[in-house]
Image (cartoon, rainbow, N blue to C red; front, top):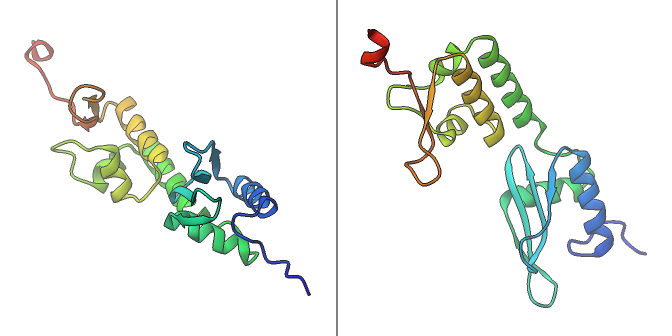
Length: 163
């Protein structure tokens, strides 16, 4: 008697898993090497499944393992609560930008990673929260690219502003 259970690495199961991921809200990306079977992003982070040179699955990230286990047992996509929390935090900050300040000390400035750890939320949700606080005049952005890391800090008054 044949089993209907999906087989990690088979073309049929891989196609069905990709479809299930997309339906669950994950963003599928093209593999960056011939050793990647699947690459996706979801609220819990980056999911990767790796192959060896013979095409057999060798390893995967924790995010991918949790998603695969849910898929293989017929459960729903396992990460919606993380996204729901992030959306709630974005709403709180957009209706009251001071809520971001209440989440963490802003005196030394914060990075996207600081917000992701304090909330918890996805990188895009953290960036959106910081952007809302910046647009409200609560934070100023500095750094990035070839300068120090991107960081948001409270606005500083300057002599020209005081004059």
